Image 1: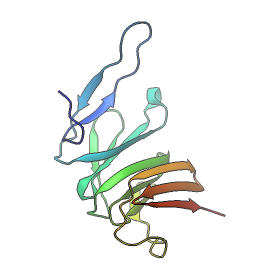
Image 2: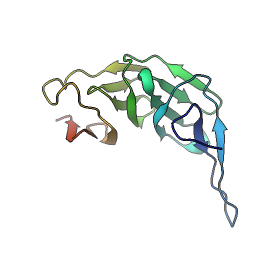
Image 3: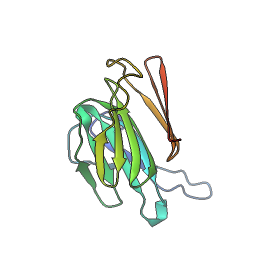
Length: 147
């Protein structure tokens, strides 16, 4: 039985051709947390990278064999994550939290204080390119661009 938001991360299997249906399998992360967002980047057959985010600033990565917890600069709930590449990404969460992945390190993105109030919970994220990222939540829509 699968329940969303509990202590199991689900990764879909490869779709099968013909009349056979795809199926879900459980990938136990090894920690107790609620997970709120998941993304993937890369070639599925060539390795790729899954990232999940969740409560208490939880960030986990999966490269094909096991989940590893990643150091997070926040204890705030993270709601969404998106990757430009395996070494460039973003995550958003409660209390206007925005994290940036550069290389292998996640850091708190602080150039947002004047854009929205501190109690805004960012819930959605879309990466258009390395130079354009959109985030939304609690009545606000934000756009990050590099000139």
